[in-house]
Length: 285
Image 1 (cartoon, rainbow, N blue to C red):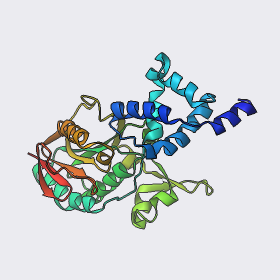
Image 2 (image 1 turned 180 degrees about the vertical axis):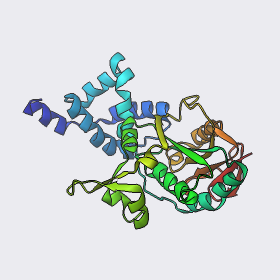
Image 3 (image 1 turned 90 degrees about the vertical axis):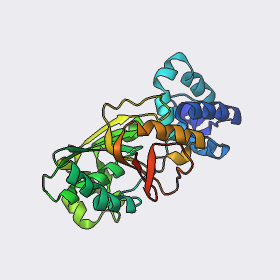
Image 4 (image 1 turned 90 degrees about the horizontal axis):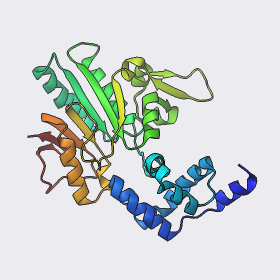
């Protein structure tokens, strides 16, 4: 890429009309609300994509996105760019306490020869599913009372690659993860400069990941789950979209299975096959 092209990309601006067109498309395809306040964020994130492709203006980029080739291959990068991907280890810890104190003992008593299946919906870069894996492993304490599998999904293919790789910076791990769990479940990189840690194979082998767009009519999932964590993603949808999404998610939850949502979200007044058992914790009827 020549210097003039780089300079043009640096100067490129997303017009209001271009943002409205792109925002309407994103909302229709993903359900994510795109108010004007997000314009600066979207422009900054997509500039990186313009540089990667060598496209100097947003006008040319949108022509590509909405063209025959782009609509098949490029829109996934647009969705990657607008995904928030805010997550932490042991975020909203009361959920993991309820899991260990109520859900897992109940599963052990009823299904001690079964495999516990957990879906971490909107799993982002993997902090939630690996927190789940650590919590379940600690409950089992090295025993073989039951096996477990965790499936993580997200709309962002790039973030799923990070989750699958299971490499986290020291800043991501500490102080969120207790030191004894860091030593037990993570391997420190031999490169002292990177200061990264990777989840141990025993955790990684419990994981699988795939891309799911909540706006699709059905999801490419071949099984039903005992536990579903769908936290802090519904807030990006309008109320009617929230209800439709949770209704679809419930199709993949076993009767008696548990559904967890974020503390900033509410299911009050929705027509769902769920009963409230704790704040932000529901059980399928």
